[in-house]
Length: 175
Image 1 (cartoon, helix red, strand yellow):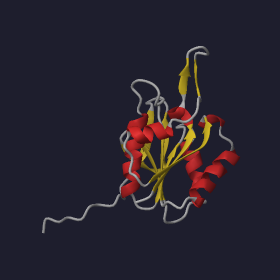
Image 2 (spheres, one colour):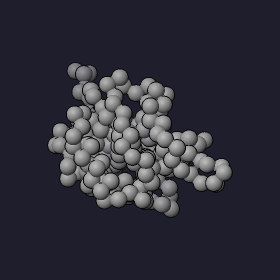
Image 3 (cartoon, rainbow, N blue to C red):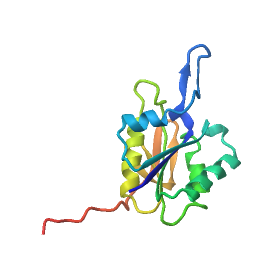
Image 4 (cartoon, rainbow, N blue to C red):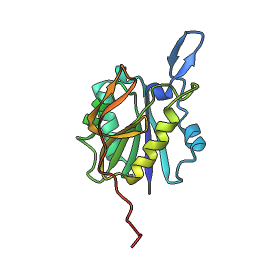
């Protein structure tokens, strides 16, 4: 099953710059994480931008949607900043093919930092992309949500919304 992982940056891709006392982008580490996580062989990786989602433009959201639409893969994971992930999902849904399963994920703590949730979220998003019906989803903090019925709860530091109920179920072979 072919899979595409698109990175757009977000907190997931940031690193800490001690001399400036802030988080910033210093190139993508997507290939490193793919190797570290032992992703399926039929996985294509593409970093299309490195941007904080709060600074993402309408044109950049449209570019993401175009990448998803043109992808030969029907399974797509999008690494995205958590603050405006659902905004981009709304744009992508206007362009994605009906056969595509698109799963958005991100991180509250950069992958480069201790105690990060980034690789857990990526692994879960990859797994979810392989079992979900075509549509759009957000995979964060051990939960899968319908991308159109979820929001980031800043006070709790997690996502909240309608938990997913339409994953493919394995056939019962106990008969």
